Length: 327
Length: 273
Image (cartoon, rainbow over all chains, first blue to last red):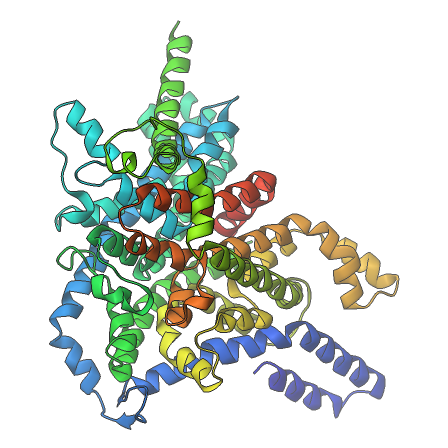
């Protein structure tokens, strides 16, 4: 993909230039290729090819046995009349609108706290960060256990102070907030990013603001917030893209909380428990493709997911490149 | 006086948060040491201690096999990623060539792409080669560059001054020699961070192994085994929690040994991005 353009360019130049220059150009091209060839093949085989086939398949109908036949836009039209899809999209949107801002707020808050320590900060930082490393399946299992309605530690503690706790992962109204709590527990990854950004803000900005008589809120608003707002944009966009893929925690929480015997391929039977409240867009895509084998429709769902994620990526790319030209 | 109050206030908040972050793990560890009957109650503290639960997990379940599969998956994925992605990151950060911008944008697109988008075409591709049911569809692509690792290491390599490279080139080093002799040693923290991320990603991965191996329990990883554990041993929360602790423990141990590189890596992905 890259190689042809390089070679073309060389040929154009070589007609006019001397032989040694040509040889060194070819050598340079070969050197670059020796570094880049695997990655370029990877981009072609694992990005461009599957993207192109997903778009093509989205206009067809087929399963694992039959071959694709063209059905035009009918998969996309079907999406408009798919109640399960609507439910899944609403749940995913909920997570984007609630979990992403909640995680950012918690991350900025805890990072601000950490900047207040001259000694002991590193210790607290490690503690706050550790849960972010927990394997998602293990963390989800731990949370379902913690929030067990009857005998779980959380409700036991609530009972001891006279509060009747909710059913958490077993209540359609509480299942998504429980997943948000799980997301907040693992907030350390973005907290570290904000901590680095906050420590990068020059101390003299704060001193200047103080000299000008700015109060604590004004110092936060006009110095801290203004300095880290590019980082907030970056974290928000990557957070949205990650939340669009939200799969593991929803699948595992539903399966474990439902208490039904599900193994391997049968796992999708508990997707969305309780009452579809944890049913996200990627879960539906997976089910359509690998449980119902409606591969054409699954690809239409994939293309829509791609368009949304790509729009977010485009915003991010524009920002990155603007940053790079000014550097 | 007010300075002292402030000291108390911020430490109280920090300690309260630490308790909130640590409590889930403490409860899990305590429950993993209970008898199977007590684990069903609302007790916090084990009446009798049963460290044998951990041995039970290994003896009575397929955990050893899952562990082995996970180590093979995470280990090979990390090695393959390094072999393919370190040179790519070098070419993107330190060599000039036509098409570099386009390739870099494609790498970012691949990094941001939700894996579900390309799941069906890739699954059909691996099915043609009869590799579904194994972990190879997750390992082999690492030979062809991992977008996130390339991005991370490129950002790190940009911080290495050009003068070191030019000095080596003047001494007659080819680009591969420059990379292996000069740049790689200087970029060790960045390379280490990328390797750790890759290892942890594979260790924690659930979607990939579910997609390719769910029909073939022989090739399950810890994540898959753990997710199904509760249904196979459904009333034995002491064993479930012990298995959970066993899945988390290696990650924590590795983290403590490599904390510095790790934190540096996380920072690099966000700030310089």
